[in-house]
Length: 259
Ligand code: HXC
Image 1 (cartoon, rainbow, N blue to C red):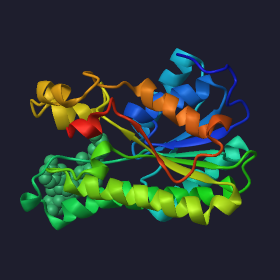
Image 2 (spheres, rainbow, N blue to C red):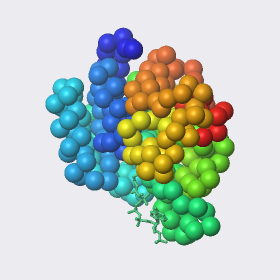
Image 3 (tube, protein in one colour):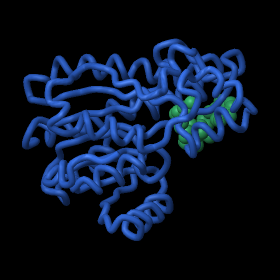
Image 4 (tube, rainbow, N blue to C red):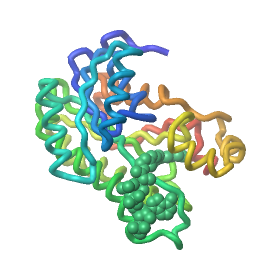
């Protein structure tokens, strides 16, 4: 499946957590369609490896900054530096996330806080840091957060992540209203299980749940990174100009199968 070449030519995008997993698919797709892309991640090594592979595989020059989304001032500086390098910012993809399986009765306060801090507070910091640049975006700024189907149903054994992602969805609705007058659209994508990601490896495969989960996905298979990247393109380009404050589920109807 392909979009019109150069659909995103002239656009500038930042993807948090863009070095690996779903984030790296989003980066490739935005870059392939002509956007200038910057990524932020905690680990310098992952960033350097990713940037090399974007260049080798797709001939993309992707900018990067080391930064932990939990740290407000660090993220402010990282976003500012990337936006300055790219000459502005049109698309902010809040993708960085942390998660682990733990029954809630065994979950420590620090374990709970850590995931809320990465997922929910990290998204807040990223949006705040992007705001001054998105206000100046050529055709209206876009904020696209990566959530998860379980944000809408509860997430037994990952209650911290479910609550954080539900918070992100609510934040997007508030920003859509508050920042709509600046031309900014704020939406979220709820991926179902996406093959090849650390999330699926650790949360499904390593738990021996692959067959059980596949049976509950009405389309009968996991998604892939490109499915999510295509949804980001829809929301980020002119096709999504009148869409704000809403969810785009890309999950093979997994939410109704309640995985
Ligand atoms: C119980 C755990 C734990 C585990 C960490 N903790 N892992 N508790 N079971 N498996 C507790 C620790 O004991 C500690 O609490 C607290 O959490 C903080 O742990 P740290 O290791 O110090 O935190 P940190 O180094 O900052 O690491 C953050 C992390 C880690 C979230 C815990 O897993 C991480 O960095 N993950 C990033 C990558 C990632 O998770 N990717 C997948 C995202 S996928 P105490 O009380 O001991 O101090 C996703 C969607 C998947 O989000 C969808 C699939 C369907």
